[in-house]
Length: 304
Figure 1 (spheres, rainbow, N blue to C red):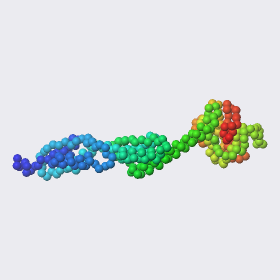
Figure 2 (spheres, helix red, strand yellow; figure 1 turned 180 degrees about the vertical axis):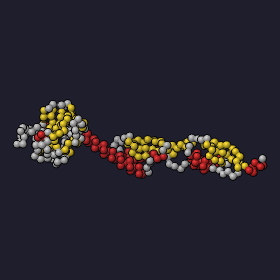
Figure 3 (tube, one colour; figure 1 turned 90 degrees about the vertical axis):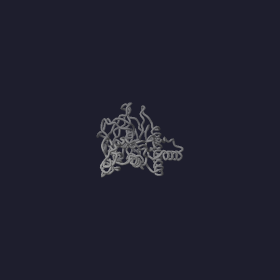
Figure 4 (cartoon, rainbow, N blue to C red; figure 1 turned 60 degrees about the vertical axis):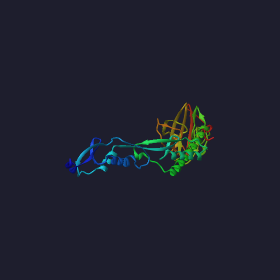
């Protein structure tokens, strides 16, 4: 027995996931190293650390020259660890705006933003988020997050007010056969009204002329389908749009046409550019409104 003790020493063989990693002399010391290195990591936002495969120990007598491999064993254990990170996401109207490290920080920000915007009905929420991917934790310093969120909240309030104003404008616009005329095609000077006679026409004027610069974008008054987009005699480059319920609008003398037959367009979409093609004495848009094929006075509905 004395000879054995001289040539050999008792050590623990450590295996991780069934593979031998190295030897140690003290299990307790190794477990403390694991605790310090793995379980008590100094990283932010750690919620849980799970060691998926615990080390296995086997007491053996080994040659006295065998060195311990604590660091290698700890590294092997770290390869079998799942770390779950936790952070707090602040959302406005269900849209994530920023993230912070703690619930206390999130609540402080939400309370401050609500205090600064008491007249607004803000949907502010805090979402507890979990991830096993450290790179997904993109939190922001508290003071920076406060300014960032307030800036974005202010922008959202302005966007909402703009949308409400635009909706109010659209609601105030007239209808024909249940079709809302949501937009005027261009801004400009009325150069020729509906029904007037002129030396350049063989009959009374069937539309309304709005004089403005060549290239000015022309917006379609309502959603519809393009039924015509080509050069058409005295009309020059002519775009026709069918809006349904017997309503059709015509846009003539354009310099450019951006649509094609069969294309669906939304109200306010740019379909052409102002020009002076066809029978024209200057840059303007000739606008016609037709109901079941019969032209009517556009000024009864637009440019009043």
